[in-house]
Length: 128
Image 1 (spheres, helix red, strand yellow):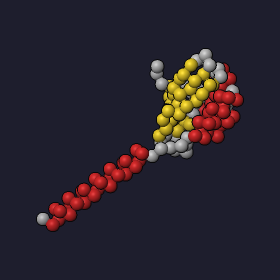
Image 2: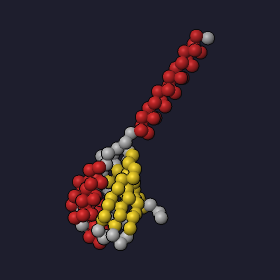
Image 3: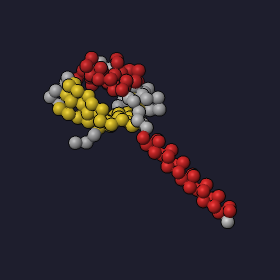
Image 4: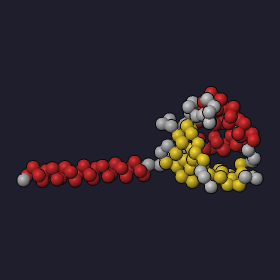
């Protein structure tokens, strides 16, 4: 009987510890301010230069290899209209949800996915 009580107490402690750890992990916020500021700067400059140190070497677009990502980003930044604002709607480990407001295009949302080093690894379009 004494052993059963020990196992019950051990079970309760394990459940308490697991739920505490899970709550701590869920409550963690991640600061991607430097990456998002660099993205905004790249829109303002119409150049990916400010963003280069925040881009994962694995980032690629469509069927194009990762080696041409810089060129593609350069074309994207040059072709888009002026960015009026860039707002972080949500940031959690590995992901940030952003709202862009462009002249002529209006407001758009997308998600940025980050690798373990905090570098931008992928962009997700949000359907409208």
